[in-house]
Length: 482
Image (cartoon, rainbow, N blue to C red; front, side, top):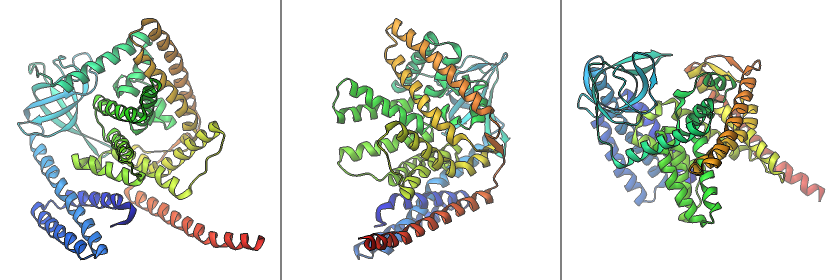
């Protein structure tokens, strides 16, 4: 059924269903259609009419996408009624509070508002100055919205008279909070302040500690290095695996342990859609290895996308999810279509693959970056060849610092090394970002994006047709030489 890319086609249909459910919230209609399609899929399959069975299955997932998203649409409408009024709220601060004089500012995650369980992110102004990172609080406050570049953001104001009540934490939340505090303390004790901020951002996702660094990285087009993403999780997975292998632990056990640690790390840094995508892909790879089955990278990407959207369909409208998904899709398709060959020189081979990955990613996410941030980066492809190996080395030394943190002399030495490396890394980023035409300011419209991807697909089809036409000619030439 559906050939080798069934998960990918199912994922596309599920996404289409989410978009339909956003605009046509007819729950019972889609439920009836879904039940009919489920029966048809079974009947066609039993009668060995596989093409009809495939079509019914794909249409079923369109309906499922709509059914999954319609409750989210109703929740959004419910939330709109609560905005602007003072409500009882359950809140967890997910960034370190920043002192702004009369109030603290931080990012928070609301789990319940007005007695209704709705999960969404807010920017909090805490005039009580009592709430701490990773705590859970019951409080009274009013949520209001602000628009920025056409996108809606939620804000919460907590007045000084509404003192929050701290709630008891569960085991995993206590463990996550203590682990985060311990790692932050390790960075603070062993590194200078700028390095502490940098490491807190790249390893724990505490970007609120960064100042001018955000602008430096944005100008160079390498902001992905300071945002916890699939790149970080992939590096973390590899480093964890080889650290465990260093202690002579068996391959299968290393894979299993690194996966468990990776799940905890994802929970520690906030479980964003981009980190979940990487986590699920790594999990699928590990599961395929244990089951001794070959996994398809495209199907793994689609399956991870289905899992993320199954948990929260609104992720499809999240910029991080879109950029993460298209980045990996670009790499997978790029390698499948062009099939670059490796060479024996490991250094040049790694540089070539970083360059190709950067090229494929840039091709696929340029219109999205332009649409959301109004910039087109021209040189970031080449910057990544220099910065990603350097960044990986910094992340590796950072792991050593955490592992050897109980040994004061070793941790201080590693902290000093990291401070020097990070200072040099930042200087390189500042220099690269200052180069003329590192980026140009231009904003894609939605129509431009559609035309861009249609052109890309057209060029891929032409390339594949030329490649297929070239093969018979190569065969004839070879025979004539013989």
